[in-house]
Image (tube, rainbow, N blue to C red):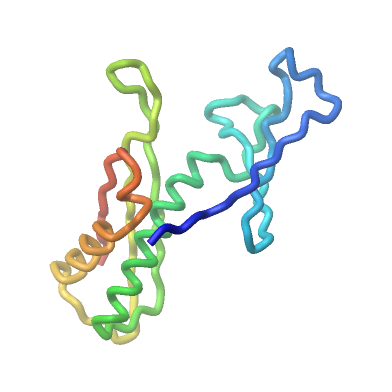
Length: 154
């Protein structure tokens, strides 16, 4: 099976000079359902006012994509096992650093899922097993070289 995923990324110069490197990095991401997300470079990479801290940046989206993919597989597996999940929260984060060659990358993503259910009685080991299986099935995690770890909260 082959699937294709589309996103339209749009930036416009407007009346900015551009060649002085003092231009806004604000842009939009548009997805096939019509959702438009305001995006920007991270203020950690491009200083304000040339980035917009309240817009989503690619690094945040990368972490969110890994977390979201993991969660969706986790919920599917839990549902198949008959576990009633009421809430899933993940305060995930990524770490960007330079490797030995001086190349920057998001080298590590840490998922910190907290799962609750009104009738959820499951051992920490069984919960970890579901997270391990979800991680192995996650398309996004399987597509990146970043280390991904899961810190399960119980």
